[in-house]
Length: 220
Ligand code: FE
Image 1: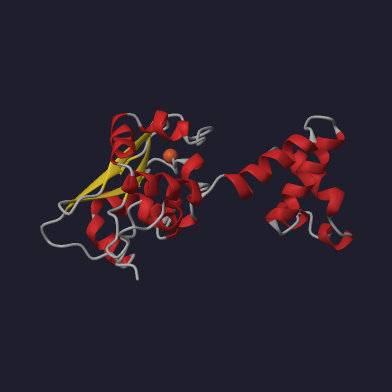
Image 2: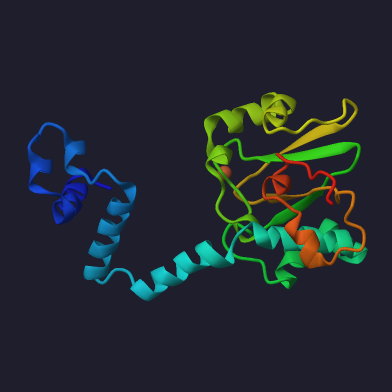
């Protein structure tokens, strides 16, 4: 955003005392990011550049329809239906699309299955690529410089900080997301879930377990 434009936005919402110090451009901006977003939204609406209904639709999608509950449903089904797990291994994008999960940042999904011998962990070293249709918007730690650099350099140490302790002979495989490929970790099915319905199973799946920074303990 150009400084001039930012200044105009700020004038819409700022109080007079905000303009006391003309040498400090930041002092004329509303301090709260939400307020800045609202200012931008209002201005774009007034100029007829955006449709408020379309904006509501987008917000509703990311607030309610897209999130880790979708990924959890995929994981639960993979645990419960071996043929679905196989389909997921062959072509995860198609398999999850059949469940109604597709869209931006989910154009090419790859499912990686944890086994007793291999733990999978996902990072985007370049930025913050993440399978939005399955997990929603990435958490801030996933976008942090520390996670992005350390996940590849010292994955076991990072996992330990997340409280994940792996057996010494379990390999850790780190998958680096790209603009094209987004990974979904299929955690191992926890003990104590024999005979559970897919709905029950889905509730046992944590978001972080699908990124690989959590493992699921025995359920009771
Ligand atoms: Fe990225």
